[in-house]
Length: 292
Image (cartoon, rainbow, N blue to C red; front, side, top):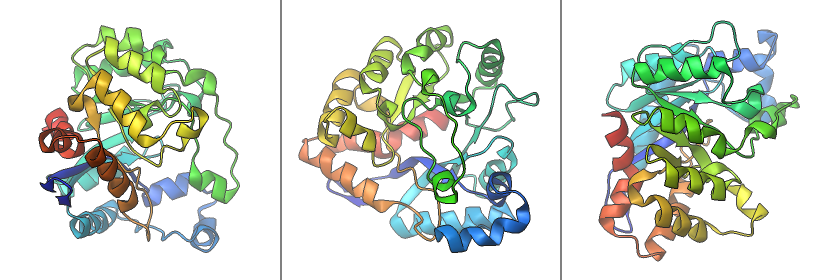
């Protein structure tokens, strides 16, 4: 992709794969599914996840993005991202949300990362059920993606669905002892900690296996009076360029890949004087090093 540093290989560490099963899980009865498009203006995905994967492949090609992490965004939808990755093995890294408190919680073989949302599912990361899941993920070489900080789910708000989340379970420091216990397992904290930047940086400083992803508009910055350049300065000062993973938080069609996030973040990094080599690490190479 053409960037302020020239042609750079760009990978996106944070794309939600809103599959047909995602919408079936979110909206019951399924007979109401056609109303979603009219209500929120989103295009409903095809039933076959490989067709949605094909659509994402076309979209990434259009923008010059090489690879992306696809997140199955409801528990139990692992098969969708695994099918997408099997159909396009050189394009996608499959991630899946897992609720450790569910009776059937497992780590599906082939997942590059399991995604934990403690505030959404209202559990402590030190719950024994979480420990069993992390141990299973570590044993098969999967990373742990752990959402901390402020959590809002746009589609739930648009549909008027309740979001009874509990931010007591959102502090990145809850990961400290866990990341130390599994030093060979990568732990990814998205959105710079989503309002817990200080804590996320403390965690990353103490645990070299912790990565931050840069995704979304990072609207949490208003809580601390920060701008994106300051956030990047602080993150680079503590973690360096090798543990930042560029991401957009793209999710739905017809918007597709959220190029505005890339444009803003690349502009900020360029204005900071980040070298081409470091930009390549952040914008693409770090993600590939984790999973290839």
